[in-house]
Length: 161
Image (tube, rainbow, N blue to C red; front, side):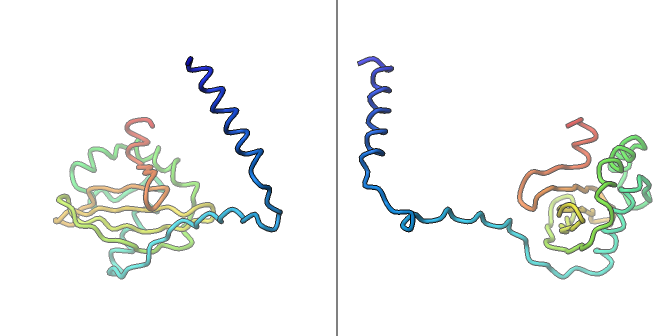
């Protein structure tokens, strides 16, 4: 049997099965399930100085001016004036966060990464700040979602995504 003929028979059989099904009244039709709201992580306790430093870094990057003494040498090398201005253009439009909540602390080989949910008037984003064991900032990212769709300021600016 040719593939086209088989496909036609399967299609006709499917249509016949739907047409021949007993019809249910409108009252019997179940409504579609409501979409689940996006999961929001529970807040955690972090030292006030950690939260303040992360929030001030976000503000500094929004303005395009940073205190280079806070960054390790590799980060300073990546953060050219052009990169900072591009980053400011990218994140400045969000404005001042309405809420800034610590939600996770991760320990990695490069240091500790603190994750914050930054709620803005137009969106809620995840702000990640990683600090080396020496206390210098050695990474940060602005993520659109808590779980996926990472939009790193560096990836956007350096690699041109």
